[in-house]
Image 1 (cartoon, rainbow, N blue to C red):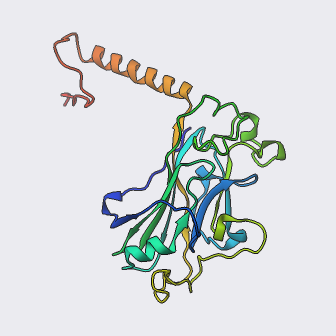
Image 2: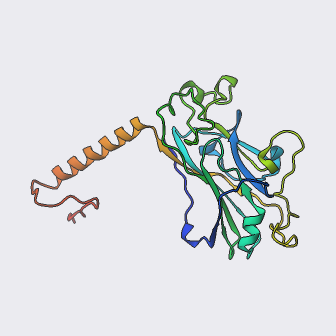
Image 3: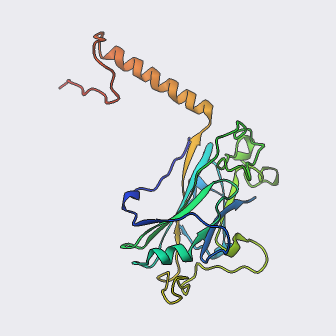
Length: 251
C-alpha cells in the first residue's frame, strides 16, 4: 500500500527562506545524502534528536513509489527575524535526489519546516531495483522485490536508502560539528538564541508517487466505479457527469 504524508497549514507560514546558496555553509545545517543501512520511512514514528548517531538519521523508501519531497519539522525560538533564519540555517541544494531545499518559519509559534523538493522528470528506470538514482535529482526510488524483506542486507543497500545529515558541511566522517544544540546563536547578530533548549524533530514527512502500473490500475478502477455508478443511477443520460456523488433519496 502506498503511503503518503504531507504537512498542512502552509498558508500560515510567515516567510520562506531562500534555497541554500553556494559558498559558506551556515550553522545549523540539514541535508539529504545517500546511505546504506536505515529505518523504514513509512513506519518511523516519534521524535529524534539531530545530534544523535553522529548527526545522521538513515532511512529507506518502503512506500512502493518515488519519494518526490521530504519535510522535517521542529520548534525553535519564537519571533526570530528573516535575517536570523536566512543567515543561520542552510541545506544542501541540489542534493543527490532533489533540486531544491528551503526553510519555512512561523515567528508567532516558532515552527520551522525544512523541505527538500523539486525533481527532474523520471527516465523510466526508477522501479527496476537496480538504479540508486544518486545524483539524478529524480527523487528517491523505492526498495523493490526481495529487498523489501531484507532491506539492510548488504546486497540491498544501494537502492532506496538515504539519510538526513545535520553536521556542518553535511559530513558523516572526520571532525564533526553540529549546530543543532541549545547554545547556538543567530549568525545575523551573534547574540540571539535560535533554540529553546535541545531541538527535536518530528518523524519525517514525505510525498510519494506510485509506479506507472499502479496509476493505470487506479485509473481503471475509478473508471469502472464511474460506469457502475451511472448504471445504478438509471438510464437518463441527459445528466452531466459530476465528481460529487448524488445523495441517496432512500428513507
